Image (cartoon, rainbow, N blue to C red; front, side, top):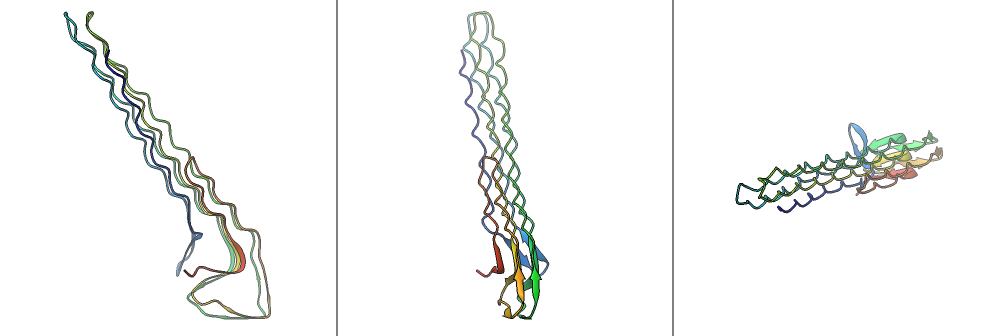
Length: 195
């Protein structure tokens, strides 16, 4: 009898968000998680030994690997004032921010497909082996939790004279789809993105 094929290796898991996001001149973009990778094809089954009256059965094909899970998106931010390389003086300014949104969860990868059945053999031959099951797709990583900030800045911090800043709660980290979770958001009156 032919040997059955080995299962295909599972896909790798996606990476969870490791930073809160990116601030550019176009605005704020929260960081999401990355998707996993496809599961690999299962090994084909071995052919059966031939007999005196005919051949052995052919081995079954390996099953296809599962599709990967997508990464979760970053949670939405609530920011009263965005500063991109723009030094300012805040004099008697009242700023209010709401709660940040939770990071999106990564999706679970798809299961791999069953391998094919072995072919028929001659009466005196041996059966072939079934194909191995495909590997499961890798799960997606979770997105970053959203930020809540009165001022979110890249570059010089604002100078404050009087006034008041009210903030909300930060968003929770996005869970993983059997991958890696993202990071939780942050809440601060003035939140710096400087390296």
